[in-house]
Length: 53
Image (cartoon, rainbow, N blue to C red):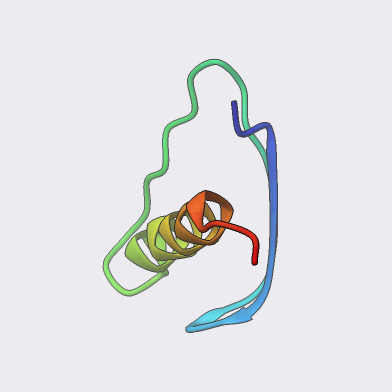
């Protein structure tokens, strides 16, 4: 389970440090980076599932 995410310099996310609980709601106005946050999580998930050579 993802409990913490720190993102620096990814798309429009300059410096983000989030702690996740059992239920976390991501909300905000348009253009603040909600989708970019999920893109960062997807990227990390993809990297984690890649085989180590």
